[in-house]
Image (cartoon, rainbow, N blue to C red; front, side, top):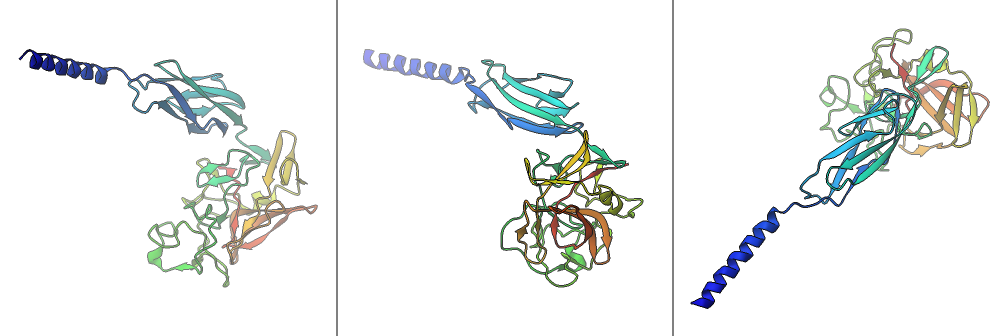
Length: 320
């Protein structure tokens, strides 16, 4: 009986110790931050993600700080860019005081050339600029909103135009249930457009003198595609290969760099001319094509008309 008594006591003690162990706080061992570097234009916002380790830590509370609140502020991981400069965003765990940092570089909101305010970077996707002014970014087919087609690099591109009213939404874009949604559409038959019938008002329901931005325009809020007149106002500029291939326009503090991102051919989907040419859309259709800028290594760029199925870069201008 006494042996059984001891067994009962041992089991009870083990049970109590298990409860104590289970209820004991799981301490924090570290924290990581994503991303660790970030580039924003004045007025832009971005959100950092802090991950406390281990995943089952009891106390995951963190505190955020900025090395210079005049340049960038941070609240619960959301950064607001205030003025040009560099600031370090730090996240600190309440348990253990572990920390991680992100270096944030704030660049000018825009560059004014001949009265037009230009974004300092190409689009990376619908509503999003690339991080670095020399990054190539996305290649949009004319009039298409960003649905992934501007990123699509698989060689197995859909071929032929999308047609039929049932395949377009109220904005004239391909419906999400269509097989070609989010994919670059090859078209080698005149007029070499990605949709049939053509629609001249996909990116601008105004005109070259009084543009009106549409929901399809991939530029972020406060920005829109340039008109034919605005694109041509850039002038000739100067070609450079250092530190990246492209063309500078303007001068001094009002200097704008457009990288030679090449283009995606509308008839084949192939990416060509990277580093030797840069093609930039306007919002203005001309005949069956659309007005654009072709910058290259010659003494002057071409302002001309290209077929709408081509994939070109987008550089936004500020809305008035």
